[in-house]
Image (cartoon, rainbow, N blue to C red; front, side, top):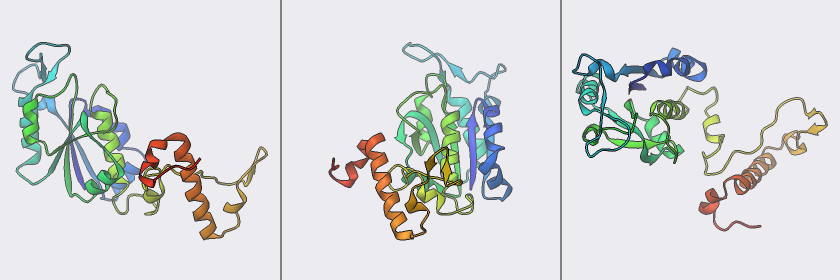
Length: 229
C-alpha cells in the first residue's frame, strides 16, 4: 500500500515511521509512506499556508490554494482515496481500518489551526476522526490511522491472528494476557491458561473480555444484548 501524507509539519512523522513495525513493513515493501510539505506549494514568497477566517473568529484557517496544488501534484491524476483528518469526521473503527487496508493507495490530509477552507472538501473522499476530542493538528491522527490500518495488511504483523485478537476487533475489550514466569511475587497465572485445553481457554478468554468490557466500556456491550449483573 502507498500512503502519501500532506502536512505542514512533515518532520513530526520521522520517528514514528522509522521505528518498530512500520519500519519493518516499509523494508518488506508492504508499505510506502511519503510526506509532502504543503508549504512547498504556496503561491506566495513567505510560504504562507493559512489566513484569517471570513466572518471573524479566533485562530487561522488553512488556505485552499496550497492544499489544492499539493493534492494535484501528489495525485498526478491517478485514482486514489483521499482522507481529511479532522475532529468533525466519522470515527475510525476496526471495520473502517479493514476497509482501508484493502486499498492500493491513499492520500491523508492533515488539518491544522482552526480548520481547513471548506472548498477543500470538493477534493476529499471522506473525513475521519480518531476520537471525540480536539488536537492541535491532524498529524497525530494520521500517524494513528497509518498504524491502525497497517495492522490489517497481510504480512505486516508477525502473526495474522494478532490483529483479530486485539481489543475492539470483535466489539469487546481484550482479555488479560500473561507470560513467564508462571508465578511472580506471589501472583500466579490462572491455571486454565497453563493446562493447554484450547476450548476451555477460548471460553475463559471470551468471558474475561465480556467482564473487562462491562467494567471499562459497558456501552460497547449494547450490541451483545442485555448485560447480566
